[in-house]
Length: 270
Ligand code: SAH
Image (cartoon, rainbow, N blue to C red; front, side, top):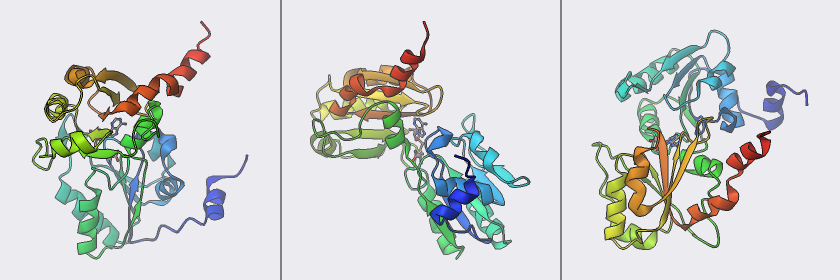
């Protein structure tokens, strides 16, 4: 296996990253290996990379020498760049004729304001391309050994955010969710875990239903807590700031499918 990435790019027919374009790229949930071929190709050709806090910085090593790196995330809870500033910077750099890469955690169109950034580019008539990524709610569950769907447990999945535009828990229809959503996957919900569990139990969900919190999913320090709905708040307090919550019977399959920890155990010489 001695093909280089440029040969792979040619083999796959990856499109050129043209000057004056913005590519909004999903970096995946953490493990740098989970970026797509198109995403890596974009990193290798970008003139400027604006990246978020959730992006693993190892990926930036694939950039060409001299590419401009702009951190556009939050550090210690403080946003270093306002959303409007990011949008105008993307448009300005593209108009100057640069290849501009906006690198976001997970998938750019899943709870990450990628839609808003793309709208601004569209309104400014800046050409752009969306490169999807593996979202935390999918990749994180895979690394936790929890199938998102399984014929024995759930035939649908619902993705929710715990954090609306005003920073509060959005007014989800808990009655409808309790009844019609066998598996719920919640982003940005760690601080609201107790309120979410209470709302679901009040709307009829079993208080001993299984749930899990996957913190720093797909990273070296991934942490999974399996719990029940009525203990979700306490479990959330033990979880890292970047955590995804899953509620549903599919969580129970982890005891059979936790490939990651199991591999670590097998490899342990003691
Ligand atoms: N666009 C991103 C989501 C951004 S919202 C995506 O598609 O994954 C940020 C939230 O995503 C975090 O609060 C957390 O709930 C979730 N998240 C992102 N990366 C994660 C990771 N590695 N582990 C656990 N949760 C993660």
